Length: 287
Length: 253
Image (cartoon, rainbow over all chains, first blue to last red; front, side, top):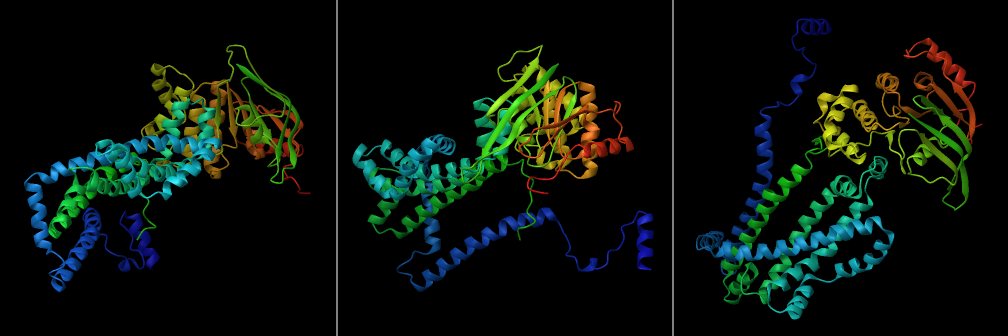
């Protein structure tokens, strides 16, 4: 009987009732659900950190500054312009150092992944570089080059370089051999092979390396600025620390975090999404 | 038009323990100009190795591959290749995949756009020119691979079991498209398969190979008329081919 009525519905162009359909969840407005799904989890994560901070402040009011006072301090830094000046100094050091490291690491990573001798030559150097902490490089750079911009660029570049190379090298080693063969068969030139076949396959590795590299570069820049420069976020944090201005230390740290979030979501994510637009969005396995 | 002459070639590989083994043994045959020569033989007998040697992905240990072309003289001849899987660059659109192959083939920039559109029309995919490959079905991607191999307008086109990875209905459509284009464009095609009906339908000549090490077993002209139709006579010729070839793998009795 049910089959008959379904057939009739199909013949008349109506949607047939499906057994158990009433148990399926309602779909609602997908755009609204997506927006909530994207905004709610990070909002809850931030709210839980602030809630914990507030709770600790209520328990230890002498040890921790209140979240409100810290936010006021951050607003003051932004409104009097000092935030923009010092953040610009730090950002410049991070980006110049990381960009230099990225250029060299892409070249060396591709060389290591494609030429056996290159791998044998650079592998021990890269492993050695990974074991040296950023603080050491910061000290060495200031001792070698003095208190100037070059020292901070050098420290950032040298600290991030081995980790970037490792990522690019791993990416090159897992390049799709079939696509490389195809490019050979169809007479691709060397530059076509690099720009159209190799680099696009390394996009994920390059972005992973960029995220990790920028995080590392920030840490090194702060250390260098603490004792090697007279401006920048690190210098301001050190200055606040010396007068035991806890609000200042946390406010600078917070502005720092906000800058990182803006870079991650405002620049890196956008560029990555644009460069990987060719991938179909298959999220069925994610909950 | 060009002719491919395979002359007395030998190819060795090495096992993991270092022991050498012969894959191709003194193999000689001709892929005649403007016709489809189908290479059949048991799996693992070295058919793909031969195609890879022709395009320079493998090096032969002995013998010669001669590309006899009256119209051109090139150190490394331009050869179209339809792989088992389409091997398209997934981050490039269908149009860009063809444009890159044309750029590699040193086709003038002014001519590329016309060629891209023309060959995508031939495989009935011109409306997908700005689509990325991963949004197409397996059969459509294989047709793009076919369009790319033909678009460079090389005189020799190699096809390595190009329909092995698609379902039978799609494979049948692709065979018809490919055969139609071969008849229409008069390219010299060397087509590898181990599907006898496919060999009977696609071929003008069939080269059968022995088990590994592969050597020439028989050279059979296809008696069926062109334009080729899929019908009972295809299966009759396939049955005839079956008497000439052993498609068992190495080691099987």
